[in-house]
Length: 433
Image 1: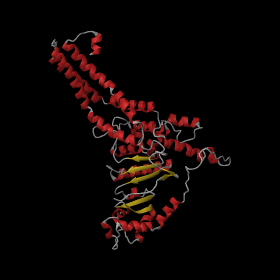
Image 2: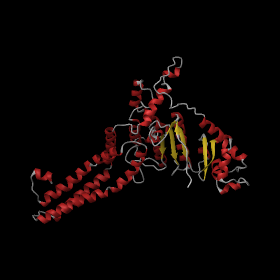
Image 3: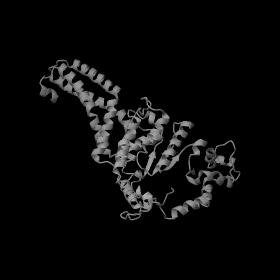
């Protein structure tokens, strides 16, 4: 079996098992599947991500000594408002995200919600895996166009995989990485990819899009464009001898970084003649703050993370009125049913049977909500991979948020059964029951 060997460095710092830099805080990953709480609005989804990943403040990205500016940005929720507007979601920011069962935003808008959620913190690299899944060509172009504008504005790097992009969408990219059977056959500017393969003897038909043409080169259909068709392995060897490969290798071997994280972060560079340094910190200060943020797995304390999860789950439970009403009817009906079976009984055996029926009802009622837990688990996996909060905070927050429902179930079912069976009518005995 083939093995991949090598080292991965970020601004001169090696990445080894999250010992120095937590890679999941450097890279923001946009999944191809929309996994959201359907009963939360677009703005609430963004707000939760912003609170978890940026601790609800803009201090991670701007100067720490500009307190008034930072306070103003926090009060106006600048990042949330800006991203919502850039993604074209301002008019639906108070609409439920929704899913197949709950009416909410459209499929294209939900795709942009998935993208915006992962832009709520200063991740240097934005990776997106087939974000066109479930979208038509027009929606894909709209999503990619808005994402390109936003990422360029924030100064982030984007790496996006798209299957069969339209010519308009393909033109939005700066560079392209072309793979064939796991071999890299081209990496470089989009403007140079067509001349590169033309020099290798591949001629693009006039009626074919560039993206479709490139995808066919690495397959057996590539012989339609070149009689001396090369295999993916041969194309990979040719690329290693190309100018584009030398350009990339020279950049990697230069050992020069715009922000060298190996530099001494305790020194301060002062330059009174530089106007830019009046509004920005020196590189060592910037590096020190950024490394500290990337070396901290969670941006909130355990208590605050638990509180955020508790508020989120309680909001979801409170808005699911259909579930609450169904549980109310179920508890009332089951209470009448069980109470009728053991009505005014004085038999000890019947009392034990009543207790068994009560425990069985609670157990079966809990099992009925298992499907909701399975759906929520997919959302939890996404948050866990992005280091939104500790796992225990999620468990505690969800458990506490279920207490109102448990108390309601117990009170309705238990009260009806208690008095229909004719148990002792003392207050102490009632609450003990």
